[in-house]
Length: 438
Image (tube, rainbow, N blue to C red):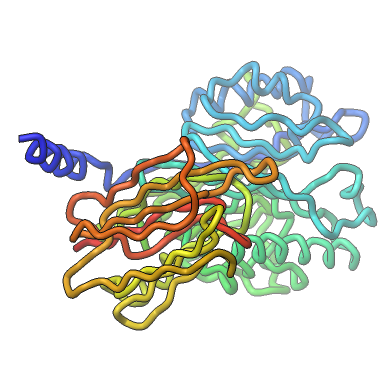
């Protein structure tokens, strides 16, 4: 009876899991520099204006908000806003980056990254540690996207153009390393224009497989040509045909499709009580829809936050319907490495070369069904200390030494473990499993 109830619960849980949804996102430069440094040509008092921005962000119930220039009026913004998840400020001028996120969704892996290159030629871009932020936002169980907030170098001098191109390249390179196999959303004050010949807003499309929501929905998929005349936007803009520097790029993943369904310049939604603007930037608002690819299921991960990101989803999706032929674990005091050889011959391998290797060759029709992972601290950092993986024939493979802090992870009903994601280095820092429909 107990096993029957467990099976039934698994079916109900799978059937009730969210497989599609919608959300919206906005990027808004909130003009939070002290007036003595930049008045932004905005009527009224910045404290009053910032309070209204915070109120309107809540009133419009925008799901994910990236703000830039959130410097010396940050406390006012948050005091007048009720989004449940909000980043802690990095400080006012000259200590902070001015980048913050307010969200209806929780996140993990938050990072602040400073630009490698900046310029003070046209504006004081090196005055504060401008750069970008990274977070992994959870939209639903097994559905997450990597969200970036950026504020690139301003100005049009040769030094500024060079710095800004380097900024965009730095984010692109970060995505390649830290977001492999993941859905990605990049939005912020890019200070780039397609019509400016030395800018590179098309880099995310070229190098990261991303789509510019403005180009897709307002320009029919065709960006303006470099060097062409730009249609200047009013603020608030009455048309989306014109181009501003505040942009939003996105991509889905093999695990779920992500599509932009509506693009707006939302300045008319963010005005002072007398109708004046609240910022010298027109906020961008984009509606999205997502839907799971039920071929795949992404399980929870366990472990620490250090190491380098890895994700087998792209490699697995290239195989189509993968099955595991053999599994190898390396370990001694901790779990040093994990690898699987697929029936197609593809090898998925992560971790280092330490420890002793043990391999389990699966029989015909045998699959990987569950794992027990134990973690501990090594030099003050959490790592996976042991792993025990069990097959559909109740055979097990173990490496490392167990601790008292363990988690049991089981494949969803109708799915098999076929690959991995997590963080690694010389050992395995964090480990999660990717499942394919049986």
